[in-house]
Image (cartoon, rainbow, N blue to C red; front, side, top):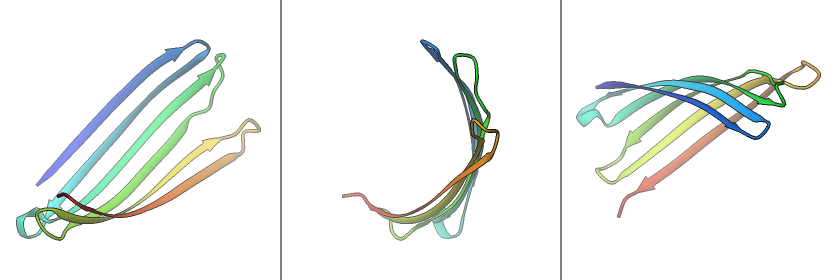
Length: 102
């Protein structure tokens, strides 16, 4: 089983504007589709007083269902942008979790 998502945002408040989009997908496989790989990519361009830099981000994750009510996951993501001096800035994160529904 597989699926895809897309989102777009265009907002404005006072001197702040932001336009952005995200595209994602997942692929589930295994017994009862208990394993899932997810990936996403997106960009946005926030502006303050008409000036701003583009931000690009991506993420990749894996989820394993342990039972009907319990699952574990791991995800890694990265975001790149330019600072005021036009230097590249990179931020990344790792998420590891478990969820049990009562």
